[in-house]
Image 1 (cartoon, rainbow, N blue to C red):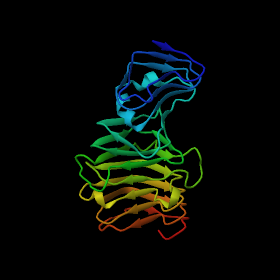
Image 2: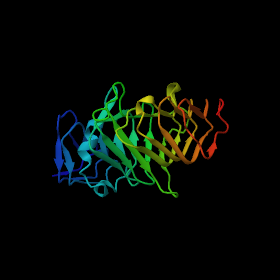
Image 3: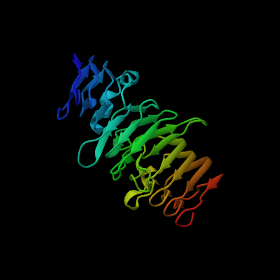
Image 4: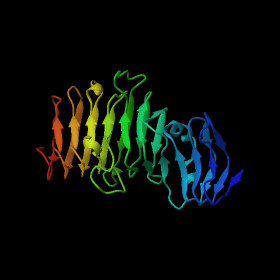
Length: 273
């Protein structure tokens, strides 16, 4: 089937498990495809729309079979994560983000059920007011059901960005690493403009005890509150460089033991490093 409308194209909003496969979704004035909840999205060609794809958190796993290259060629090549009230939950196997298709997150996302979120080098995540990323859930922190993994690993040339197009401090909430099912690593990552509502831009919680968090060349800038909080019992390994500059509160607060920072930068913050 083909879709071409002045507004949006296809939609499965409200469905329990919608299925959209092998369609041509072309030249719509709004979002080419809006897909909510489970089911399958695969084999579609989505191009020349204002935006290619809008999903809620329950549908992110449903689109992993869709070829990302077939979602490109729209006015704004951005995957929008939105809808509905309250915090959304993702439970899948592996979710991937590529630099060619940035994400815009308008809601809170909580990854559970051993989901692995992999971001390729140069990927960008844009968060708006209400945007929040939570890896795992605690209490109770049962890694087999409530744990998840964040693997945001880039090379030395192109950083992975968690930021906002509204370039003001506190434009979005935070990245919370709460219950991990395996090693989480952030390598050559920038986190900008988080810290809404007094939240730490990055908070590494006690529930990660025993599972390492590796921070390798991470930069936290322009938070509306603290830059980084490492709580008691968290196992954190800092490699190369950690910077937390120009934040409204402390750049870094460490409650956990045995955290060594080989090279750091904590400048122009509103509180002590």
